[in-house]
Length: 366
Image: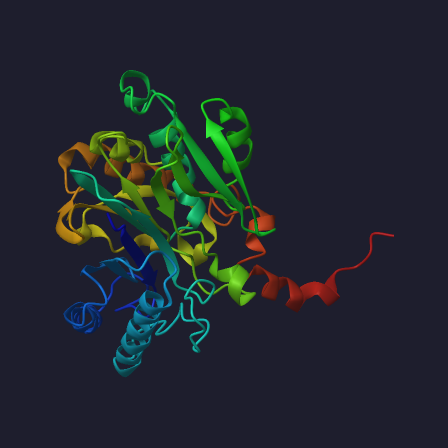
């Protein structure tokens, strides 16, 4: 059986008023381009959406991951949408398109990429998570809880097909290295690294019993590509569910706790992560709280049935209320840590420009 690949590729190519919304004309342009690719049988199916100011392209095909044709399709779509954004004088038009000459792979060019390939099961539910105003490490806590914490995921204890646990591929974004940890046996070693999400990010999760792919995230850091601050990374994540993987309820459960992530205003603050429906995925107050949406799809021979807007549920109302309480509390810190990020992380914002301006005024203490 030929593998189905799902590719979730996103980019901020311009926002309608500030940094919160994708213009309807951009969504329409992307849909037209992907429909043409579907008609030409380059892709099987697609869904275009947005989280905040990020245009999200969800595509299925049979060309495996990192395929040049699929990546060029995404790149060309973003470039055309950037032209529309510029014609509309949208803010940050083409922001994430750091390189404008395609060289076979969109990775490292600015847009975020997460892809996985697998043989479709008898029933193949997946969840696509998309976040705005935060960084790739924002998935670390959720992925740990989903795939390694039995208090969150009882299936790790009571489901024989999950009892052997899962392995985590962790990327060091600064040194461009990777390491793999097996849970539960290496949980403590794993936590040493993923507890520092600005540098170490969970890229992929695999089932230990057969090394089957379970989840994959985007780990692209714009500031490390560009060499200066150009906006937060706004990561994406794909998680497979049920029948040997965590249930939908187990996958969503970590987001009932609005944990703190780096992002918010000017990408320079710690803010809570708020689970929202698509209609509320447009941060305004202090570019925060950071938003996360969860779209559920049922795959059927590569066709995307759905989506189901999974956070459009009053069960997450308390999490949203808590987010607002946390924002009230943490905002009163103003420019002081821990609301503002630590200095080492501020190196990847606009702070170095301020320091350079003032460096000649610093005097030796003696």
